[in-house]
Amino acid sequence: MSESPATSEAMPGSGSGTGLPLAGIRVLELGQLIAGPFAGQFLAGFGAEVIKVEPPGGDPLRRWRKLHDGTSLWWYSLARNKKSVTLDLRQDAGRAVLKRMIENGVDVVLENFRPGRMEAWGLGYPQLRAIDKRIVMVRVSGYGQTGPYANKPGFANVAEAFGGLRHLTGEQGRPPVRSGISLGDSLAGLHAAIGTLMAIYERDTRSGEGQMVDCALYESVFNVLESLLPEYDFLGHVREPRGARLEGVVPTNSYPCEGGKFVVIGANGDAIFRRLMLAIGRADLANDPRLRHNDGRAQFEDELDEAIAAFTSRLAAEHVLDLMDRAEVPAGPILSIADIAADPHYLARGMFERVSLPDNTSLAVPKLVPVLGRTPARTRHAGPRLGEHNEEIYRDWLGLDEGAMLKLKEDGVV
Image 1: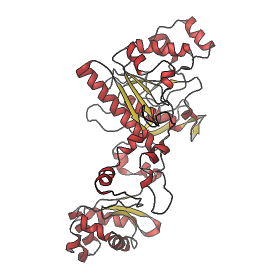
Image 2: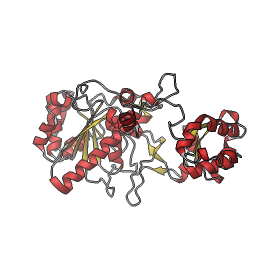
Image 3: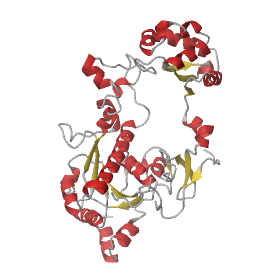
Image 4: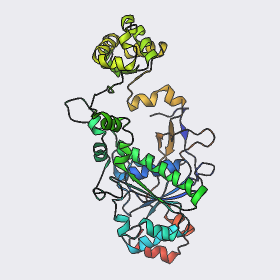
């Protein structure tokens, strides 16, 4: 992706979040891979000092997917704005250093180990609270900290299935499919970040005490399932996969165009539906009293989709979208990442930021959202080198002397 005027360069320097809304909040991120670190990325982007505590071998994500000079491009994005220290929490000395960090002023401990691991290390919430009653402990796991499945391992794909989402994806009669990304991890990371902010707000404005935030991947998925539970509870209705359709909302689908392309059209609003039918030359359907409201249209979904597809399939996607824009009907193209990188709206909104890698290579990363009018998040630096901030954290902040640092290195603790 080439440089463009709509991309912004990461700020040079130490990565200070001064002036951002979460400036002054210190977070220890103990998790690995995606869900917990996604929450950490959100907090760091808005100004929190996020200290990523990695085992001496590093977070496995450093070597996932596409690499540049041995480091994942994904890492540079997901770990941006964070500080990296190495610390072996399997050793008593490593856990002692972590406790010392908490004693020296930490607001949040964010972890996504399997439940029980922190307790086995003597780092459960009661132990952390004994050090500082203001500590907020955010725990991200597959099934939550309690219940019969708590100790089971859980990844995003499992959470998407157990949380009810995977049952809805794909076409009827065919195997379920995933969205193409680790959606369960990202949803959990967002829920964890929201829980973190609520716990901090409550502590600072009311009780003066921290609390534990229990964020399960499957619950984060289940939380976005809209009307599935009330419909099942009241009617016994089980929603099934519908491909590009949305059950009971008509019309909304992907429609074929010339050259094998598709466009997405959503015209489920009553007035919007009428405008769509007039735009495709079907005044008969626009004026049909049976189709005036969504509940009536839902009974004729196949017929309506066939009428729309018969129109769109004769035209280029660009022509269809132009007609939809003029008729004020919500519609859009199906963009690949290559399309997104060149799209004028993305560029105008500044949705790509650029960071400098260790060899001064420039890399585009997604802009941090949502956009705050006065104190927006910003990318200040790319994901750090492994242990890049050991000296700053252990020597400058904790005050460990040369001998103590050497001992930790010799013992493989850092």
